[in-house]
Image (cartoon, rainbow, N blue to C red; front, side, top):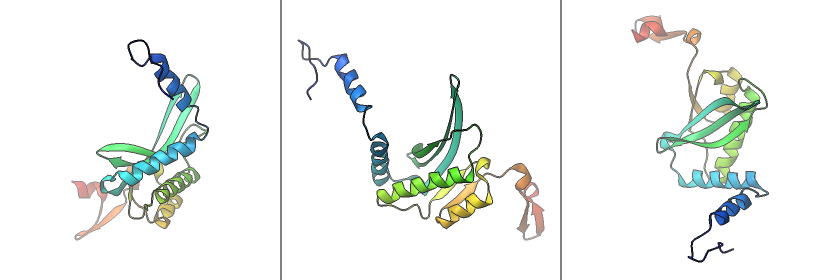
Length: 168
């Protein structure tokens, strides 16, 4: 449909606004966004095959917005590829994370790629035996920041030392 033009052949601002309104009325918006993400995955070369998972929480008026997001690094920028709106306050649980990883695996498969060999970077919130075993079952390695009380002991050539001693 051609743009509405005035007497001087300029596109009227109202015409652009109406295009945006029509665009956001797409009936299958989730499928559209998934297609865009698959296109990005197939075209973008993810840096060092890193995936990043994080959760953010903020308020819009009285409503809590709690998003669990997973994506990749592309040109030193985080590119969100899948997300879940958590209908609760606070941390995600292992089932939320499994669902998110499954959605990401499906997205990669739809783009003709695999997540096997990717390294997931995460913060302390994502520690948990079941979740880590699940990542390993998907052949995804991980680097997760530990809580201070979890450093344990490291074996060294001179015997066992705790992590704080190794750093000194």
